[in-house]
Picture 1 (cartoon, rainbow, N blue to C red):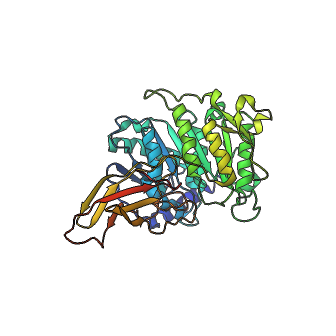
Picture 2: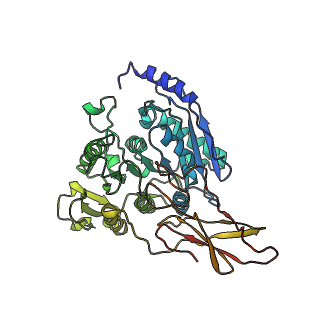
Picture 3: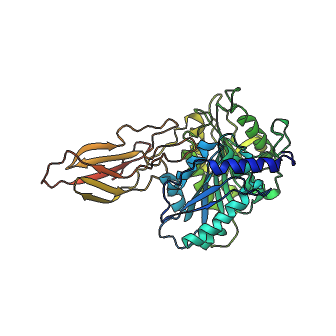
Length: 444
């Protein structure tokens, strides 16, 4: 971006941002906390207003990390960030590692320059770190300001997450980049973006590039056709230097997120298990070399070659997909084939089932591997309802909370309740609620 244009762009974006109709919904009440910062007109500071909402896993005394779920560019994607902290499946990952789950929502108006937030050097890095300190104080977890980061980002969010790895490799446990990567070398097609430099420390941070096949792999024209060339350049540069970098092409999608969470969550789980320090304040641990698997880069042609232990990989390692362990490698092989990552374990059973009059309420946690597709309601041993009645998800497997374009729950948020309108008045009934995951497995 030309230096003399930057102040004008920031001022224009700031003025637009103040007018954007971003609703503060849903309300943030414990264990959810939120802060909001106004736009700045100072060069180098964040040009858009932004909200940060964090979910704190109940009962955790000391956080070990924070998982950041970063939306993409455009007004619609930015608004979808408002619900990111409420995603039950991502909460299951966060709870597993005593991590907070944080979702930003930049108030970017339609047609405004996304680079003014998705390049962290334009103020979003500083705003993010300020939010960690402020949310830590607000929630009673001041350690939030210092814990490691696990980053997930879609589109411009992938650009942001990759940029944060390049700026702060010592803070990032792992990063998943869906459809967007930062620029490492000058490119005439992206001339307004200043390239990043990748230090040796960056090479030790596990990352995964993930995009849809219709983003330039099989479909060479259209709005998102540039995603593959950008990912290919990023992958080639860093893997050529030995970076812990994988690449997974979704065979079913374009720019939408699809079923990527069924690989992203176990991949992040493996990285967090290996890297989070045992004691707060200690540095991140290195990924264990003995567990790593390698596979030939797969772009959808022919059979998927099964990954093998890195020590046994015979081809050029600098061109191979890096994977953290054998379990994730097996899931990767299935994902790049048809995204049908398998699951053999049932979801947790619902808890705290209560009946008041004809209304049932309950609590439930998402299945770690496959999330939550819905519930079966039984009365006196007979099935009387399914929630939702007709599960829908235009972007992948049906999910109880629904799914927006940037991989966040639909608005308004669905609630866990059911009204039995056909119960016999004056008769005592016995109810059961059964959870169903997206692999079709039922809880107890």
